[in-house]
Length: 107
Image 1 (tube, rainbow, N blue to C red):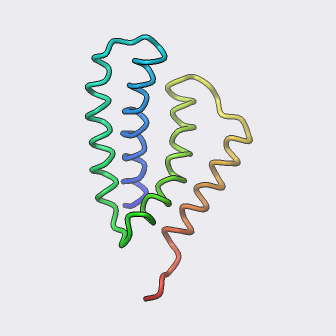
Image 2: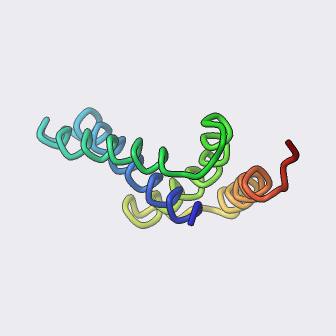
């Protein structure tokens, strides 16, 4: 379930940040900021739902998922296909996030 929450949080964060990008860099209407702000609030809420004992560890693991999701956004929304180095980097990040999430921890 953690990966699902991270994926949903990443989508919300990327969509929220993209609304600011679109307004500032693509000359879109300032009205784009309203759903962007709502999306960023949803991101914060979803990330807070992750069952982790320390916020910093939850954020660190999320970072790896965010990188992979950003490359998905690059491809699906912006129409730029990630190259093999993008994919290799994302795989490394997912592996790192998985180590943080899945290793047993002592007391």
